[in-house]
Length: 163
Length: 308
Image (tube, chains in turn cyan, purple):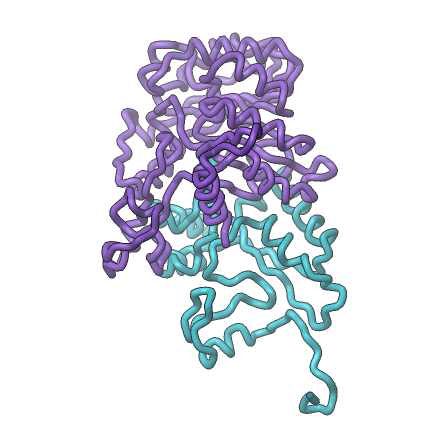
């Protein structure tokens, strides 16, 4: 099959903005996504599946030989912003990045979760099954916290933003 | 298929085999979560396994689903839209004890805390991450609940996880022989000390501290690395007297790397609602936490305060 410029189609993992643009026209999918809802960006896991955690995601993502993939897209992962606040945990994030590259990954996008995401998670918990927030000397799934506590976490961000 | 579902499938398989397979006896345990990329549960990046069930009932417990040794239903009610689908009735074997379908919720608001799994399958699952833990980058932490409360399961799991770096996080309340064996099988111990006074200890945790302190003495005399963790609960254990006696007790411990103080945080009660329980702390949650660390400094004990 020849593409519109007379060349061949090449398989890639980068979805650019199409994970949103195609959301309207592609019907519901077996991962629990309804018509109109966004796809996972690029080659990232579905937003609607409960995952085992970052290490397993990286292992699955890098299983195929990505050096053969043209037009590669990044793996996007979100972490609570407190993970980037002290040297010890920042170094642990660096270890994670190193593991990704050594496993054959090519592009990793890390997000520190901000207030807007948390507000959205409060409204649409089904989309944020894997969002972990640090609460004390422990972490919890944000969507499982009582609303009062979710509000607390959100306010904490508001405070941090005005500092 | 996520890990929880995998564990459930394994559990069903084990039950169908009657828990026995030739001479190789299966050792079953109950866990309530596996969290990857935990960064405060020992050196490097860790995956933490939470054993379900604890002999202590601390009034400030932040993992209430870790107390009972039974499977429990967790329902996130505030987000429930009362669609009623979970009450229609289903034929899933695992839903039967709860009179509710635990799988149908389209918002994912219902789950069961507690997965029965055998040590071999669990070790196999955890070993999948072995490549990550090369070059001392981290390892597996066994937490809870109380790991020592499932002795056979714990010891067998630790044996199977070698050569991965392991940590055991414990209240110290467990059989002394089991604890000794666990020390031998793991690389680092994370040991909680809550209060030095046995009567107050019993009042706020449900058990006195004799066993905890005697197990600790056992640990002190060995060369095993360990970290002491002290939750600071306002008005409960943050008196000058308690700080002093804790420092006195810890001085001279050979393998002590550092003491980590964990100041109480008012988020502790956040998860009780999903268990349909009320969090009623018998102390002033917003009380100012005192930090009398001079005695620790006098004995040359390294300490840090964990930020929330």
